[in-house]
Image 1 (cartoon, rainbow, N blue to C red):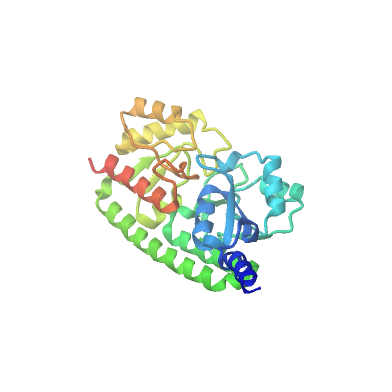
Image 2: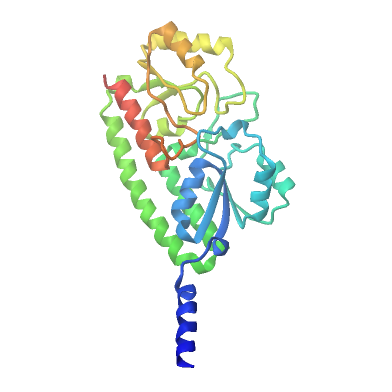
Length: 296
């Protein structure tokens, strides 16, 4: 009898002490890869997170799939950027019939007004390009997870605090990197207007043929204006983005003599083997590229 009890205990005890299985975790969905990484850092082992728009994907022009509707239908929490980034999201939520709580990560962010006219973009959605704004995202993610899973409050608060400390260190790195670039060289051309928050926070000027969205192509007039501006202001470099076709930047560089800098990650992370697999890596990659092109 004692042997049977001991055997039963030996079989049951590992089940009692084992970590939660995937079925026990809180299912969450993030609309794009950068937001998904922030959610993962706050949620830790208590959640699963899937990103609808994956690495190197363009959330501006994304076309949701039936699999996305299924993911939303199974989720308990859906994290969105807001500020007009996910124009396709309302239709997807309706199609999925999801009962998930929607958490807007940019709640409390001071929006940068878009200068783009005629395309329905009142605000620049790329708020994550400022580390200070990323901290606001983390606070909203933490609060959203606590509301959905009160038992995990201590875990979410601890994870958020740890990650916020990393963001503090990152912001110091960014400021130091930009300070090393001569003030008169802190002007660059990027494919679309994705770095306005970065420029406002860290003292750089970004000029883009496309507006805040990649939905519309740059006009010949806009391209000609930028070519003239590069020549007049002696802007030293143009950069390509991981989500964009580089042919326009190649043309602008050829016509102006501006240097083509390294690849920037604006709206999406790289894949796991790339240089921008996380938000922290993305920001560090970008400041390395700025420094390399603009200090020389």
